[in-house]
Length: 434
Length: 90
Image (cartoon, rainbow over the protein chains, first blue to last red):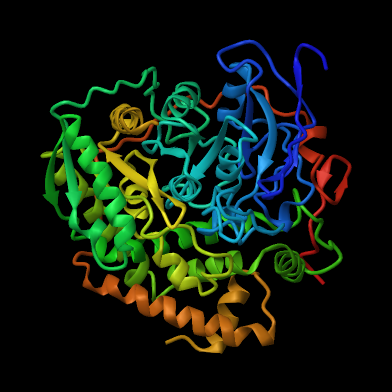
């Protein structure tokens, strides 16, 4: 081993990784020599990047995503690419084209998704930190199910350059780690302006977590503790909120009426964007080669039939349908209005409170195979998707266990107040530690 | 209510490929999901949303990009520095 590479040969019994770098180079900086895992939908120069899809098997990106470039500049060792639901489409990591990841707390259960590999790699101690992506909860859900910390940054705060797009208007790259301090450290390194992402804002993150939350006003939305939320999970989260009150915060009941149709709006928008984004996977420029002797419809169809998994094909078809002539007004246009209503609901509540708290997920981690019906899997995203529709920051921090499985406290904040949700998570983490 | 024929048509539009024996399951799941989407009928308004956003313009200046060999590295079919596609005429 030289001074500037680390050996990485983990015991990957939970199938967290799709590929690993046995000798990972690193440089000088804040993360010098620290092993960081990267979700497999984030481009890494010279390291196979598949989005857990057979349609990208063998694809070696000729460039780094902006976030990866920044990590390397900070000295990090990129040690591998983590498993995920194919293209980010799922809540369990069972939709990987290369087999599911298992939950380190109970291998008969899913790690959550879609960043399940990143969460499991951190939870199992294989890496100190990881990058995930969050389109409708894909960082927060696996963070909650695996008992780690995960931040979905404000939309625009972290460059999406090099992130293989699934639903551009919703998704963000974000940090995952065992502690709030490490999530904050990673956020310091990846946030900031990048002109290669046209939705990138010039809002660097230079914050260090501060546990003083005296006077903080917390909104408690009734919808986050209503029907469909496991009472034991709700009780764990309420206890955590009581801890925050003991630290000097006050709570205010509130309501997000647009949650009635937020999930439907989310699935119309994400499948519509996916149907357009995933048109690029045709076997011509990358991935398994198309048969150029066939006519182009036949060639594309055969490559896509063989390369895409069932859930990806389902979402492409749903999106194609939602955008098709005669249905656009009923689905896509209404979903955009619904999205605006969600944004307005949050804006109204945030004029009276500083953060909103609730459970990250309505239940603990599912058993493998439990969510085989697509609609029942979609419904489990109800508490995470409103954040993506509104573009606001949200963090999931562990808050106890139910039936031996971790529960996540979700803290949502005003746009560009990632610092504040980090502080609240930090205050809670420091208060309950040990 | 979508039919098997509708699903087959959509699969054709999306160049996704679908087998006859998959149509039943996809159609059933589609109808369950679309039934759920009907809740959007309750949403008032027509989708015209105005935001205080403006376009950011810049000069079109040529900058360094990836070398040709890097760009072609992942393409299955190539010829004389071009990527080869399927035929457009029979």
